[in-house]
Image 1 (cartoon, rainbow, N blue to C red):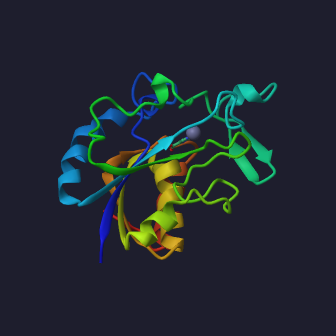
Image 2 (cartoon, rainbow, N blue to C red):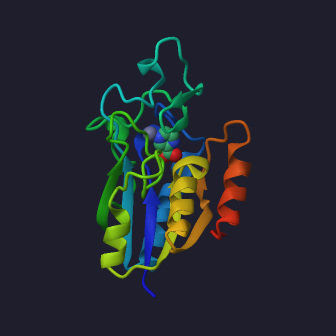
Image 3 (cartoon, protein in one colour):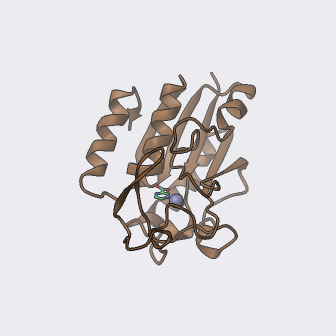
Length: 198
Ligand code: VGL
Ligand code: ZN
């Protein structure tokens, strides 16, 4: 058994003051730094969109943030512009300890497909390469923390469980966006896929 801590999207735009701020998102930063001490392997994810990404509301005429549209791969929530490649909003929260990261995996760089999960884009087929990385390192157990509980943490945890990793989400070190009951639905979905919620 070899374990890793997967820190999801602790980036400026998801923290207070950011364009898609998750309430209290910055409160988890210091406790995540502390939790890193308990893990030999730390992996960070970074939401990393090209300018004009298809998940941004302003890329779609007449649409507003949080509208849902039908994409070729299924329904997609439209977001305020966030985590644009190279911008301050895409940078990690300045207090996050990034030195411990063995790997920083970026996602959402495909202009036409969003990617909540650290494993697959939202078409649920295009891989990010993370599974291969974990497999070749012999990592079997993952603990997830970060932002947002009901989107990127949720989809990453479910994909990891589907790929047969042992998955734990430390809820106290996550924060949610919670659109229309999305947090309750995400918790239920994670539990039904065998994810341990701590
Ligand atoms: C996220 C919405 C859009 C997340 C990323 O990190 O949960 N949510 N992009
Ligand atoms: Zn995004």
